[in-house]
Each structure stands twice: as C-alpha cells, then as structure tokens.
Image 1 (cartoon, helix red, strand yellow):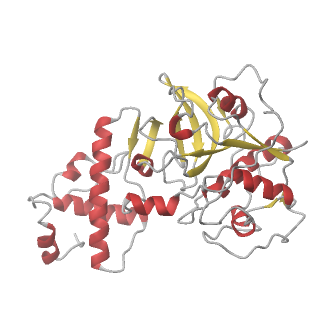
Image 2: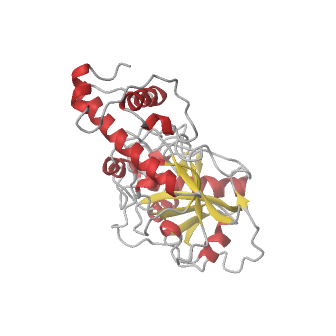
Image 3: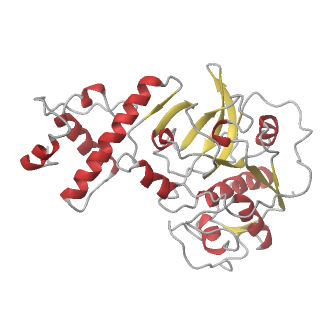
Length: 351
C-alpha cells in the first residue's frame, strides 16, 4: 500500500475512521468494486491503487493524488447508492471515476444548441410511409457501424455523431464500411460549428455536401484538438452524401421508421451523473431533454419486457457496454428518454 504516508493517513482521518482490515486481493466485479471494498480506508486505498493501475492513471504530486482520491470516493459512493436503487441498469468504476461531474461535463459533452436553428432539408420525411417495422434492428450486425471511437477531452461529439451516420448510409448504399474523419469536420467546418467547443450535426451534413465529401480517418486522423484545415488532401478518397433530413420531432414512430432504414445522428441530454458511470443494462434513469451531447442511434430491440434504443457513444470502448448504451423507449414522454426524439437527423446518398 503506497498511496499515502502516515501523516497523510492522519489527514484523511477527519472524514473517515480507520479500521484494522487485512489487505485482500481485489476481486473486481462487473461494477469494478465489491461491498467489502467499502468497509475501511485501507481497502478503499487499495481499490484506488488498483483502479489507477487498470486505467493507467498517474498524478504529478501527492496533493493532486489526494484530491483525485477524494473525488474517487465521492463517485464510488454515488455509484454504490445508485446500484442499490436501480434494477434495469448499473453503474461502474470506469476511467472517469477521478473526475468530478462538473469536470466531466466540461470535457466530454459538446453539442451546441445555442447555434442558429438547424437547417434540415425541406423535403418531406422520406420514411413517412414506411410500414412493417421489424421487431428489432442492429446495424452493427449488418456491417454498417465502425469501431467505437473516443473524442477524448475535445467537445467534438457533434462530429462523431455526424460521421457515424454518414459511415452507415455509405455502407448501406455502397457495401463498403469506410471509417471517416471527424478531424476534418473539426478543422474545416467552422462557419457555424466550433470544433472542440461544440457544434450541430445538420451543419456538418451541409459542410460535407458543400465541400465534396469527407476524407477517410486514416488520411485525416483524429488529434483530440483543433488543427489546421487540410480539406484538399487526397481529394479522390472521399465519401459523399447527397442530402440530409430531420426526423419529425417528438415522434417515436418516425424515429423508429428512420432507424429501421439507417443509423441516425441523435442529440440527447447526457449531463446526468449516472451517464458518466453507466456500465450496462437498459438505462431508464432520470434525465431531462436539455440537449447537450451528440450520439448515433444504431438499432433498437427488447429484452425482458424492456424496449430500448441502441446508442453508439464516442467516449471509448471502456465506457458502457463496450462503448454503447441501451436507452429505454416507450417511456410515455413525447421527446423520449433524455430527449432522444427531439433532434434526430440522417444523411441520404444516391446509389
């Protein structure tokens, strides 16, 4: 046990009594901790050290480490309390466990609904007359979804949401699953969108149309920061779209009709604390519809009487269910859980 000196342990005693307890090997459960870890300070320290090792964490000073341990303890308390109350989903000690919720919001969201109103196509919703909805759809199994990506501490979720739906329609039309560049949107789509400081998916669709397509990720790789626009690079290796449409707002039926035909770019409210530590299950926790995060809907289904939407996030494969979250549908809310049906859109591509 090498976290704190004896003097630091004395300092910690003001918030927690130190009990004598043996150092046991960590048995990480699906949530990353066991009830035994919460019984004394020694075990909490061991848990923190194991968590640091697992996620490659290192701090510059003992003071910073102490601060992060405090945040870790508070987050663990929240996770454990919520896991005792929820039955359909669970939270876990993921790589964000040393971030305060305010820090997490500032670093990992990025939808900018303060931009001028989105400019969706004026054409009629193309899937309005679609009938015979399948009971379930999973575009991952159909080969239309690339690997889970990680936006990091750049507020570029809008770019990842856009790219996911463009990758999807491109595969559906051409049969080729091509991983595309979010970085190009961050660097070059600057008329309305603001790089790591947020944006909207519809404006990104418009940029792709106006600028002749989007480059492959391998040709224009992600740097987790704003760079210099290089839109002329490798002009022959681009993926194009022919248009984009908005899904009628607050309509689960319209949302599912569109999703049955292709992946969608979706805005949600992801600022709730449970989102930070979501680890699995069908999420039905508290959230409003103040949209602050761009994601991609890639399917829907049901399990044990719970209907859900499959959502691809951009917080890396260690978050959630290997980078995905299943969000409950049929909630009775017009906007859906966390505003799912409030601002969805999709690109089109001619064959």
